[in-house]
Length: 249
Image 1: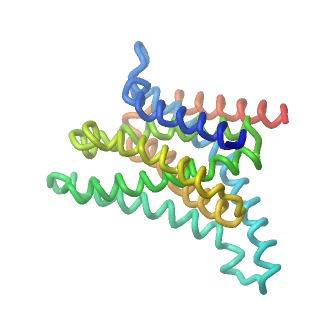
Image 2 (image 1 turned 180 degrees about the horizontal axis):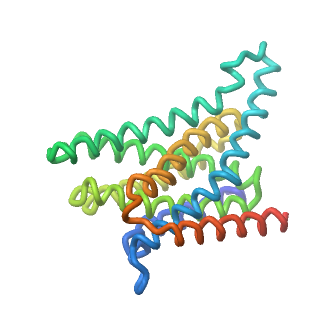
């Protein structure tokens, strides 16, 4: 087994642990839950603007170079990476609106709604850890660790959303399914050893769309239950961390 795969395995285990302990991490003693989630939201938004969006632009250039070698670049091809990111955003936004509509109508969410949510998040988790090895190799350990940390914090926000919509199903089954999907991504990476930059860029863009949605949705839709000060603190902390990591490379 290569060193890159071993590092990716360690990061996958960290993601699983953050997923498992998400309820406790949301309820740190002496700190209100809304403060914790606002801090995480601010940290995630900083990562989105300072790392994820520039990364999509860089992937877009890479894909443009690859496509130019096989044919003429068209506006659609040039925007392909962003279209995939938008698809990820819309997929999770549609699922969220479906659950919200059932709640507003005072209709108990059906089992199929829960399974759709869970399947979409499971796919995102699998894609995330599937791309980890090549991200470790391409971006270095520091950025891969930061990416893992942001995704782990992202799980905490997702955990709150799922418990709000599907409290019984998610607590008894859903969280463990998501943990299994994390491990599945690494297993697939171990078996196939992905090295296609084009595919990895597309998968990362799809994941990015889901992160964008959750980073903003929780803070905007639940603005009466969030804290701007903690959100700002998370954004500043995330910015400083990114600057320090960039400077050290």
